[in-house]
Amino acid sequence: MPPIQLYRHRAALALAGATVLLTSCTPGDGVGLDANGRPPGESGGGQPPVVSEANAFRTIQDTIFTPICSVCHAGASAPLGLRLDSANAYAAIVNVPSVQVSSLRRINPGDPTNSYLLQKVEGRAAVGSRMPLGGGALPQASIDLLRNWIAAGAKPPAASLVAPDGLEVTSTIPANGEVSVSMVNEVTVVFSEPVDVALALAANQVQLLAERTGERIALQSITLQEGNDSVLKVRPAAALPPGSYELRLNGSGAARLAGVSGRMLKRDFSAAFLVTVGGAQ
Image (cartoon, rainbow, N blue to C red):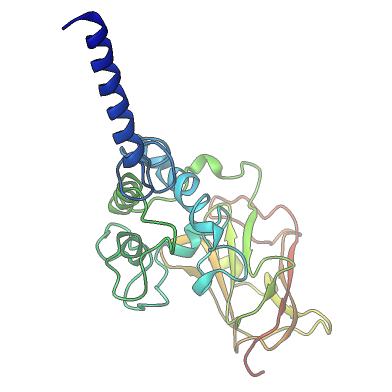
């Protein structure tokens, strides 16, 4: 083939290839760009990221929950109370019953098939639409990362995140300053490490008060969340009626809240919140 014709032939092939590439980059179809507009291999594209078991949840948080899910699932308005921001996600999903299908847990460690959150992102849940809603399916690599983490036991974030100089409260639900627009029948406290429940049950270690009057709210129970000893569930005897409330945790004196490691709560802790919808006294 003469040089000029050969040049034109190669240019035509290159143009055709570019056209095919551009038309194949439809978000969410698994070809070209992934559902998040990224090339495969970047943040959950075509290949699952290579991560250690200890860092698997952190990778899931950083590449799935924070950039995609927490757009809706955060704060007081989180659908079905499912908060997937970095402070609350692990406590909100692992061994926690699904609201839509109470016989299933959101994440059932070791059992991906019967983990409701995975069912939702895979599009096989019996109730509702596939998640993320309206945003296109997650890339298969991201789904595989989530599935593999569950199959390996849904391990918590790496132990290196534990505060070395004392027990800390990393989050509460409702959060300090939060206005709850749904019924509050429990307060969740997330700690930096597994907490000593025997200390939490001691008198005056955990208090729930009506903020304006200082009256103590009768508690039904103080328990650890099943499968996650870093999460304390404080349940009032009845759903809280509309009003202002304060959660207090004892972090002073010789006898105060501590982790199972013996590290004590660094200081007294309080979180005030407002309830606008509630149950009877």
